[in-house]
Length: 206
Image (cartoon, rainbow, N blue to C red; front, side, top):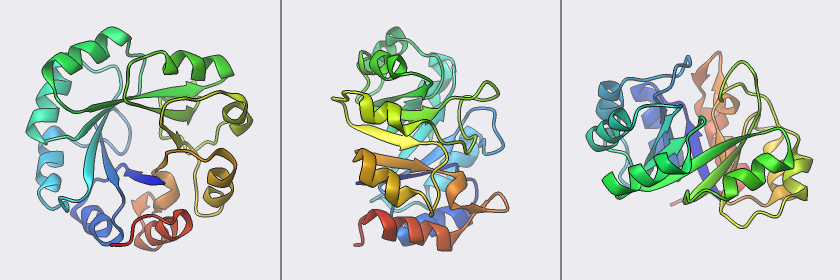
């Protein structure tokens, strides 16, 4: 079980991550309340344990900015969380030697089928919202995931909390989980909740 903790913005968040040791942390470069600049992400990255990989989350961003950000921070993974096409994935591959993940906002089983056809290394299944591309804290209909034949490593995102995560991973057996609001209190990362998620998921404890 791989753990990604997303939306880190402060030095304290990085220190918490270094303590609990998720597999990945995420910097969000899209327009949400958790957005960080390329410069801030690069500064925070310097404090991060080298054992934790860094994911950059983008929504319909230009190729030039994604490449520049990946090189400057630097990033280990680019997560495409918008309406990006196969062409975008291919162009990123031509310019960067890092993993590419593609998120799907799941309304129907067809959304899962569609994202699987892309050449992304891993997929991320998130809840659908008309208001935002992610980070809503809402849970999708996980029965859609149970019905789907998924042959790529997949992360579950959207609405995960310390209360529901254990049941969801038991039902879906994902490659990993991606959690953000579920490890926050008053919109700030909460060390106790981060520790609890690692305990629940049996995440690494080196």
